[in-house]
Length: 209
Figure 1 (cartoon, helix red, strand yellow):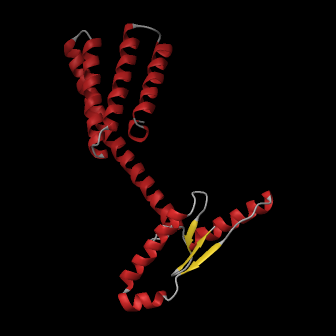
Figure 2 (spheres, rainbow, N blue to C red):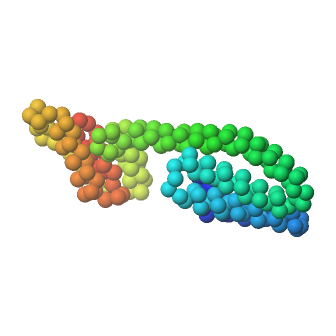
Figure 3 (tube, rainbow, N blue to C red):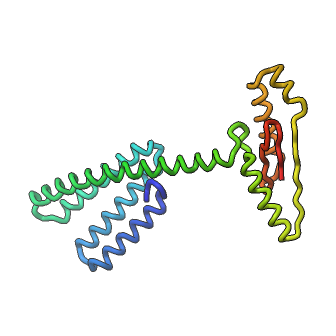
């Protein structure tokens, strides 16, 4: 929760978890201390999640923090310190095994999410200008047109073509031509309203709806 949600969600999670322990286990010294430990862990993990550390270092930091806090509370709860030491040892070993698995699972989820976002962007955006691509233009235009017909509103379609663009490529090279396309794309984005959408529908052809 701390990794994906940040401080506030993990703090709420700590409150809910602590409340559950008190209601399920009943109000006792053990349940109260256990609830406090969960809340302290959640707050600490939330603080670590807000840091500028890499995801890998955040996970390691949270992991070590949890081990330390849990160990302290075990020593507080268990009067027999030798027994407490054995409990902490078993807890640390089991937590390490689970923690490593969870770490790889979280990193896998993050990677999969990043790839999904990238795939979504690449399927709808023009790689050069960052505008909507031709496929997305067809979808958005048809949807906008249908909505306009149903609500009896008007739609304006602006088609833009760069004159003599082939001469730019032939004279200055394709890198310069790409720069022209990118600058025009930026001009269109800055000029149009946020409710409009702008697309590159061909080599040097653009559309704004």
